[in-house]
Amino acid sequence: MDIGTCFVIADMARRTLSPKAAKAAFLLAALCPFLANYAAAALSETLEIFFTALALDFAIAGLNALESRRIQPWLGCGIAIAAAILLRPDGGLLLIAIDTYLLVVLRGSWRDRSRVSYVLRAALTVGLMALTPLVPWGFRNWHTLHRFEPLAPRYANQEDEFVPLAFNRWVKTWMADYTSVEEIYWAVPGDPIPADKLPARTFDSETQRQQTLQLLAEYNEALHFTPELDAKFSPLAARRIHDHPLRYYFWLPAVRILDMWLRPRTELLPCDSRWWEFNDDPQWSALAVGLGIINLFYLGAAATGLARGRFIPHLGLLLTFVILRSVFLGTLENPEPRYTLECYPVVIFLAAALF
Image (cartoon, rainbow, N blue to C red):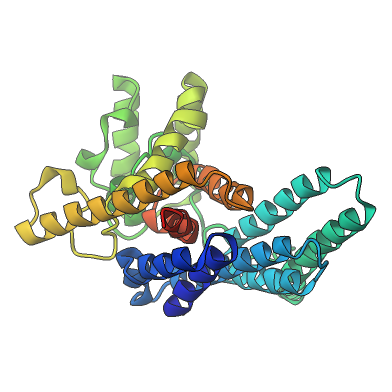
């Protein structure tokens, strides 16, 4: 599937740039260590990236067929999106991005009734093909769980499993990087939360610091959250949001997005997540720095390709997806770098524009 992703990204470049760019895209995808890393992991990333690239490639093929009015690419696009959604609910962002772009195309085509009809059919086809596979799943959950749940739950929890939502909201008032996810967020439940690993931004006052440490001490004693303990985090989170709304709604999401895009992608490796402290074995520290440089190379090449090829056909579609997904990821309390890998087909495509 990962090798298939290389061919699909190359096909995107072939359709919109040139055969030479397609060869470059294939090499950049095949040699990308971040995509290869997840081919060896029991996670959904490799499949999700493949179907994301496939959906975008079919969408480009459909946009290229505006004159011939072929509907087959949109059928393939919808099926690929359906697979992405079934793998992970955030695959639905693909549907939003593609149909949003089609609405923009529709707005620019309103004088041509035939073109308007085709774009509307394309948008409806994509939506129908993407959402139809969720219908039996939704009926099954309605019958079995007695609630409307066509997608996997946000926290992938069991039906009777308690989710500490107030704690998660409190975490979101200060969480900015993957290191805190690894050290604090993933400790719950089952492991003690190391209070000394909390960053300074966790507290706004000495009173708040004492209150926070007391709540963490209560958790560390039991190593699990009860509804009563979780409820105690609610006023703490509410106060922090009330006192600093810009920090909660804008600055922290922006920093989380930057962290997911820019940090060395070593989350599957034994490297210390605090790579900048260089207190790891020399080989792992060197690897972390090396992967950080490679990540910056890919992003820098994509930015340069974007600047040089700003008239690439259907560029708006690809950028709409990347921006929409990045903004969505900023709303999560757990900024994990792997969540931006679904955008890497676009990154590699733009880097290929250099060629």
